[in-house]
Image 1 (cartoon, rainbow, N blue to C red):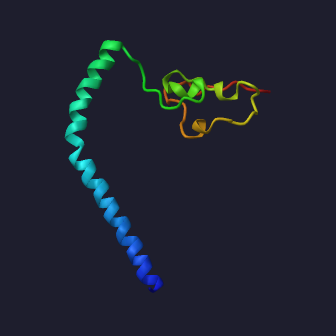
Image 2: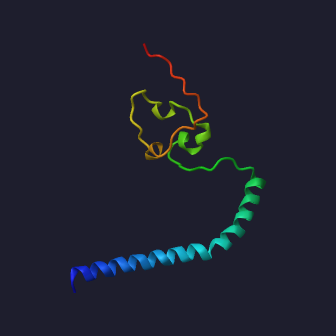
Image 3: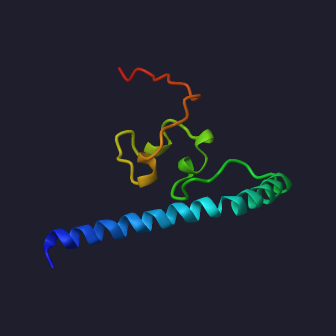
Length: 102
């Protein structure tokens, strides 16, 4: 079998699997919508707050409660040691005032 035939087989298999994933998403949308109402009722009953996106550090759990310098709590020049801190930014509502270090 030629290399081009193997590549075409690989490519067509990938496209077929992608199509199956899209079909699954389309057919399962109705079931997800039904579960969404139940989940909304549970959130309201339990009085849950913001969504917890990351579990590594306390300043990435609830970005609405993040502090500007929490990531560098050990030292102002310390490196970020949690990967999730590089995926998100502090909320825009936080003040952007910095003190002069001179």
